[in-house]
Image: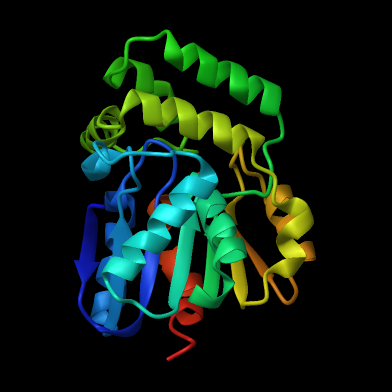
Length: 250
């Protein structure tokens, strides 16, 4: 599995990207962690970006287990886990399937279920008959932001999205649509921070509140000028909240 790594003190902070994204979405966070002397790792999940040729399964559970295998290969002990969007769903499955491997959990722009699973499944089915490429992924990328960033940045994100293997995009979308962890969130026993964007139309602040209310001791923060990627849309505000939490176990 491809990854971006920054050396530093353990425990490692491991960041997991969202749908049609990559480790590159977490580069600003890795840089901030490195400046503070912490080890940071951001992975490309199987089927996505630099890991596009890695085999599945591309289900949420399969991706969580692939992440566990990656950590095994790096001989990493318990980690601080960060997941954004679909990566937050993967992170939830990871901590539920591998509870002893997580010290702290940061969930960003994510939820415990899909509000309209039938609609999401229909969208996944439409991908199966479409020609995969930048034109197809453009609406997906535009939907990540409340206010779109400048075009050079968007162009890079479209290129990253187009690198996704089409079969991975379809299987992951279907699995994400069906995933429901809501009733199991009370099993999460590690310190948990949830950060949502005020203007996120897919994973709303209300979704964050539902998770907060089911994870003992969890805290919810809402960034007022963000959509679905608060770590990129409001990096200063995001890191002001996130970094103290991520580094608290040192």
